[in-house]
Image: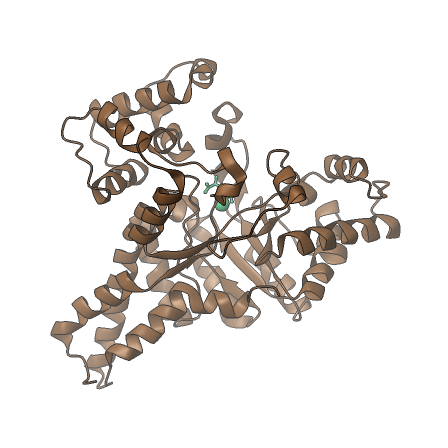
Length: 416
Ligand code: RAT
Ligand code: ZN
């Protein structure tokens, strides 16, 4: 294959980035075996919490009146205020339009009824195929919480696993509210006193081992507040050192930390009510250097943390940065963050995860991010060509495959 020149570079990079299958390493969608937990279609898109937060800014109404509405009423309300009475320029609103456009739906009448008709005529199985294909995603990693009463029975009963929807064991309730978690563990037959003594440590290890065996997760994960410190003489610190890290080592899986979320800044907004705060990156440094036999996936929510976190990743081979999380997942910050990561880390990071809660969002989250990743890579390859480096299309294919799936797969291989 002949080397690429600067003129053909842009199109080649774009084509490669668009056609390379993605392993989406953090989402909140479910295998269809979880029934109603899998969200899809126009009403779920318009009631997505990113959209709901924007709705309250322009159409103030008592919170309880909104929450008492049916899903379709909430969707009507969002459509009216965010799409009809003003232009839907925010990233969350634009995303809805990217999805509808890519499905070939006409929005020129600005009516919800024909859109609803389209979704009503789909079957979930066929629609999943269509979305995965259109988004260019080969598989997604779910967020699986054994403390979730809607989800737990499905795991306990068991279902035929598919490669498309892989598991991640999420343990927020265990780390963020130990007294409540201890009560649940006791209810489920684990011999827990709540004092985090040797007996409790054994019981939590058994609990984790049972769920790792049941779910075969790609990793264990937690989201943490900006105040996260390590080491720390708190239930969270003790549980991490005595239970989570040994369990992760034994199972050979990574531990993912998503740091910087201030939960319930406005509780009336429910899921839409969380905020962001600046976290202490040194806590991650200490975790990685004290536990070299553990692997850590880390993302942070604050823009202010991104540079320091990149520098940390340069220091610790057992740390893999991932994604532009939540409030960072907007074009201006994806661009800035991805550019900085390439400059400091080369190709040794996972540039994006989608965090989708509604299946259809795979289409917009990935098409928006892919365009930015391609632009950043084009600039970096152009710099190499200008320095006399010969670049071939197969080099680009190899590099993009690392970013889209290879780096994650190497760090978090599937469990046997
Ligand atoms: O991005 C989101 O949808 C947030 O609501 C959270 O789910 C966050 O990503 C998390 O995993 O805690
Ligand atoms: Zn998430």
